[in-house]
Image (cartoon, rainbow, N blue to C red):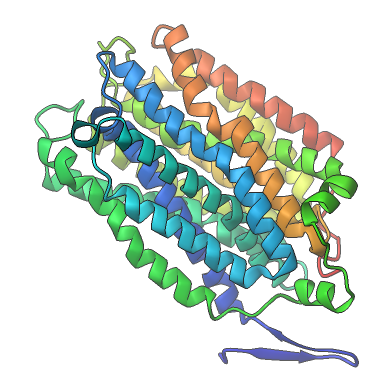
Length: 451
């Protein structure tokens, strides 16, 4: 396939990205971004409570680590504003390159940080700064990748193409946790509740440093992109906004609010299944906060198997959303998420079979709800504020959902005396908020995304 295809009409000649390049560019970037976030999420459970947030109470150290994890979500709307402004004024390509570089540099530097034992409070302070940089970068990454996919999609295939950036989440999870799993196996610990001394000394740094290799690959792909027809049409008709954020708030505030709540259940489910579950699964059955009592390697292998369902059902969701519509598909899936939250205790009380079923169902629902978002949120906005509007909706939802989800989950886990019942109820309540937003919203499948 040639590197550039030219399409002609009576009044325009526009260079477009080949299908293979669109798929690869939208997939590889989000894979790297989610890899970086999962590496931090895993370290927030395994490493940082021991090395950066020492405390006499392990629960307090874990909550401090999760608080820094959530702090990045606060930076994401700022990243959405900054990169959205660039993306709507200067183009998608250069903005995506900048977001990827920011994330890659921050992640690499985390792998070089001193610990609390050698640098005192400077260590967690630097960790917070770099974590904020990660969140800032991800605030601009997702919407740009989603726009590359949907603005270059063939007619009637936007939801299918919109699933490609979404696939970065399960792929990034598998790479990140698989790498941690290999390192932990090479540096085994005699205490299942604590990594080995070698792992804590230097092994945990390897996944952070490895991100540099992935970033180089991602940059090579993204530098080969050309701008989308939607953005070029906006430039030609003089539709570029001086301040896209102001224009989006002025004319599309309702869409921004709806988009934020569309994502709420997705975010809460996402972080409960990927972050809280690792803490709950590894906690000893006799701990102050009792959990499932699995060793790290066993539970992560179970999670990776579940994430395979995440990827499969992300791909399944695209054809469904193109055939039945985004809104109708998501109403049914969100209703299923609300029901799933009420089944946590029965499933998690049924032994290994129940835990595996819980992981598989949760991750399958995650794929089904996450997949259509790649098309739905960009379709809410016209091309001249699409990067900003979709990015703000996506990332403000990260504060309401993802930033507080691990913290609230641990608090509810403690409130329930070790039972996950109230954590499941929390998921159900958030799903009901999303369900109301979907009922109030409109279908976007048939809009003209190029104008």
